[in-house]
Length: 461
Image (cartoon, rainbow, N blue to C red; front, top):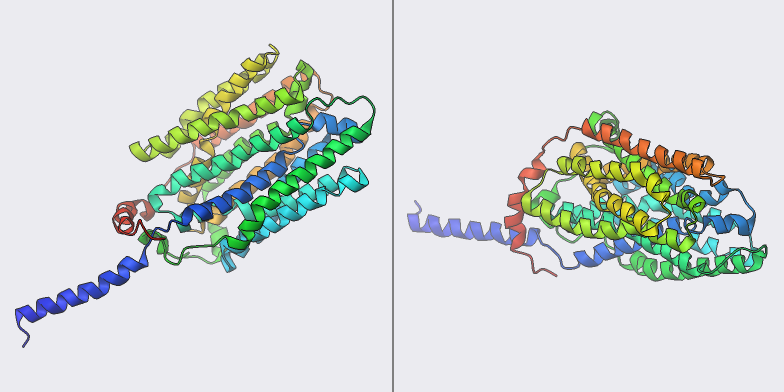
């Protein structure tokens, strides 16, 4: 019969055997920031391509002698392709991994940018439209995996903050996307001679292709789907449903459907506004460079609010749904008053209004995505994000084309109707979000355990 001392020694040996593998099982790798940067590079490139024609749409219409809706199609092509490719993208992730998805997206984006450059040779606008459609096909393969990147490389308690940073980067890249065309066409005035305008357009497409190649080639070569070991115990749980079961549960979840409608109306309205913003402001005498500054104002203020909200949410454990509801109030006020402040023809006043819009709206973007993941837990998060973004792009395409028709003659009366249509889209979104019910799930309960078990491996490389 074993003595008590022998039993204690045996217990200590057993504990050591269990503890060592456990410590090796969960690690927080420093390379997570590099992987997040690669994802950011891909999303920046995609968002820049979407924004290229927006601030110079009036100039492109005159240079190429084409209707307004054809110029808008260069941006709306992104909206059309995203919902069409969301099913293939989510299925690809389910049978492979997020690295394959991101690399496919990068290749399509780079190919679309290269196709746009052929306008240098044929001096036509259709290569820009076709290139935008090709790059738009790659967009869901890129931005749909943002929740997966946060989940695979970061701890659960850091996920909301990471999602807010990713969402801000996606939106912030629109600053570069609208400023670069504005700077390239700065000082340009169409006087009947199309040659200078077509040369500037070709230079713009070549410049952006070089930027995209710089960002995307390293991403294709070095991005990894996941670390060798998960960052926390809670992240080791595998998907519990097949792909078809996940789809069925997704489309029968009432709260997700309401979030889908809300997110589509908010982001779709915001994207459509970006597409036709030049047509809304031209009747009041705003120049392309002024419009690019106005369009950049929400993003700049969104940067400040993203930092503030991420700190407050993490420190005070704020209820995400209440935060979104609170933010929608000033968003609606700013949108409802936009037209009346445009009539002042003051750049500073309009920038102030759009700054308020961006400050309160930008943080709502990642919070809605995070709430969608919670509503569908434990279904693969690329499905939640993918279908929300598909709804955004589908509504953005339909809404963008509708707005382009409403404001095509660029009169002050049409600007009023355009602004009120965008305002109505946001009101409907607020009503949908108010009726969403967010369940609690086991992922929240595992946060404290994840803290204890992942902190011991903070220094892993």
